[in-house]
Length: 61
Image (cartoon, rainbow, N blue to C red):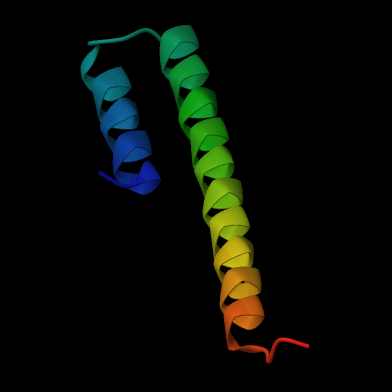
């Protein structure tokens, strides 16, 4: 499930009364924070892979 889907479901839960506004907004903020953390982790892994591939492909002295 994507962050957008989570936000959509939380807004829907708010609209139908399953959660109150404070809870929904707190959960939406948490979902956005998790999304940023995952994005940062993905970027870090991609950079590490790029460095690893560069060192493997470069000739040894």
